[in-house]
Image 1 (cartoon, rainbow, N blue to C red):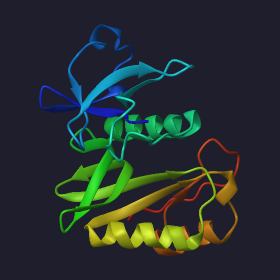
Image 2: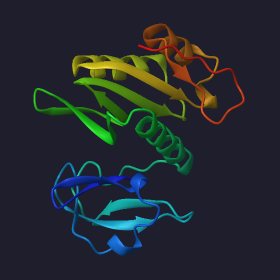
Image 3: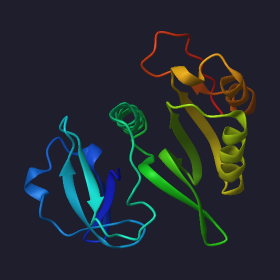
Image 4: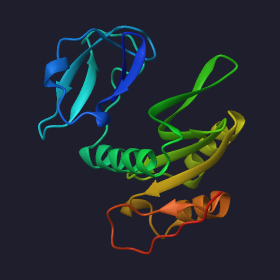
Length: 182
């Protein structure tokens, strides 16, 4: 469920708009494949972009839960508010040798340094977290903050993320929150 698209060459994010009704028929383009996108509204009123049904873009079939979107929006809004000098993006692509390696849920760039925020509410193994970390590190990411859901709390994945980056947050859950800056 993409939240970022190009409009007249500029990337725009649905998180920056309370209502996008007046923009509904604008010429939105995918930030990856440049295909035309359409503005849609979820059943609970969240705006997002959608490809045409027959799109061949790898990003056209990506879907996330409303809870995932809520955490992404919270992180995005908080980073923009607390870091006005930073460039904060949703769905930030990271490439290596011309190949797309990872797409960060939320990324903050300050003075050429990248701070990625990964929201992982569903199950994830330590091996999967390790692969993502390796990919991000190989793309020059300086720090990954993991926002882990209840399914990843208190287990090996939590321990891996904490031991590797020292930053793990537990969004929307009444459990201990750990933070440490990179």
